[in-house]
Amino acid sequence: MSANSIITQRKRRATRRNIICSVLAVTIVILAVLMLIMGSTVYPLSEVIGALRGEQIRGATFAVMTLRLPRMLSGVFAGIAFGLSGSTFQSMLRNSLASPDIIGVTSGASAAAVFCMLILKLNGAEVSAAAVTFGLLVAIVIYLLSGGGAFGGGRLILIGIGIGAMMHAVISYILVRASQYDVPVAMRWLSGSLNGTKMAELPPLIISVVVFGGVIVLLSPRVRMFVLGDDTATALGVNVGQTRLLLTVAAVGLSAFATSVTGPIAFVAFLSGPIAARLTGDGRAEAVPSALVGAVLVLASDLIGQFAFDTRFPVGAITGILGAPYLVFLLVRQNVKGGAI
Image 1 (tube, rainbow, N blue to C red):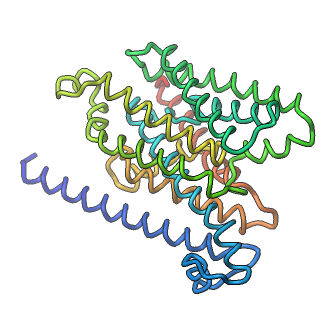
Image 2: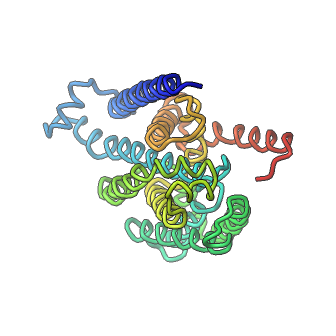
Image 3: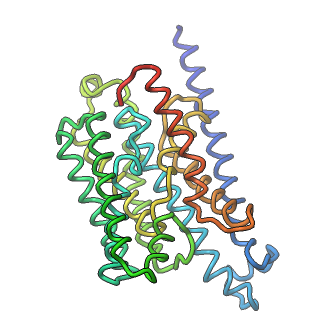
């Protein structure tokens, strides 16, 4: 293959990637506007814009600024966080099963949050802080048990699945022991929901997306080299250990902060990377397209859950319906190929 043909193909891939990212960004804007307009009362776009400008419009100002805007923003930033986190793990470990909700990170954050809500009777910032802290601790435990510096992908996934099962058992035990009057609140949070999100809860999530997301985007050229293997990446000048540690901290931080606000929205981290890879045609999950796909998945699923059925469903129920068949398909395909995790 000549140099000119290689350059031409790279330009075509870059053009396709830019187009896909633009389409995804426009889709996010459209979905965000729909979330601000639609609800128990449908407000015209002019009133929504007026409310966002600070005008006092009866009914619209409260609905948009207090209820719908925090819900929309939490969906956008949580989707970006989950999408970035999942694609980073999948690219770094070269395995489609390596996402925070599969390897137990979000389960650890959820266990801490449920313990705080039902046993310690805490809420708000305390629950979020506990979820983030314990999510990071669980990630450290998984990292150490998987071999630390060796960080074997298959070993990490298997250990993460085991730790996740332990965390689910802890959650089940707490739910059984808790007062029946407190359980519905925890169950609604565990299902992954944007309901009741407040503006005061969003700054830590937004900051984490800016900081940790920026780290991942800056390191994304090195992530592409991981596909070639650790030895090749080292030969190309990548400090594999340092890069992997930075990416792990950033990906875990994104997942933990998103989970602390919205609960564990199922399969968004798992699906975003593969969908982005298919759309861009690169065969690998890149950071920016995966982040945009994550936001689209959360916003679209929330709108479907709220307005497509007679009964309203949390966003996590809809993403679970989308993600579970793909997980089964992936496991069956690997089993048919005879490949290991």
